[in-house]
Image 1 (cartoon, rainbow, N blue to C red):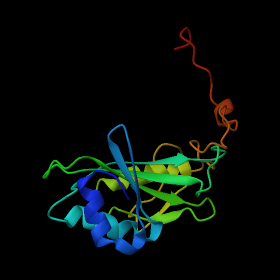
Image 2: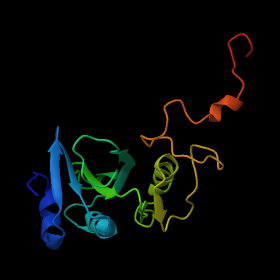
Image 3: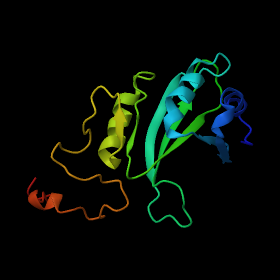
Image 4: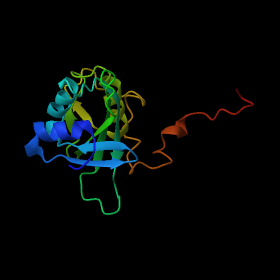
Length: 172
């Protein structure tokens, strides 16, 4: 891992056997972490006195379906961390999840703010977070059967909107 970031060296020292991979793009550093080591790595980032990543700013997901030359698992979870206490540069942790096993450990026990962010990834992409206290849809209705931010979801939808009346300016 040859990226210039305070957390990169500390992670390499703490987890030498993981073979962590890092990349930098426009000053943003991201480190890829194996799925089964996410909680251990994030716990270290939060608790290490030199880093103190005390804020989980965002969780999102990327669907790499049909991405040219892509040989990794289809989904990439993206975790964005900040350190309010140490003002350490922002860090992005990326975890890849295969479409046949869309399960990963929840970070709610470490960061309470992860609750709604994980629910959004669950609702929009179908990622299940084990240990989440209230994993249910947050943006769509409970009976909705799809995950609308997946690339195989049709842009026009699956007919969900056809049952709703069209409201025009004149009828409102």
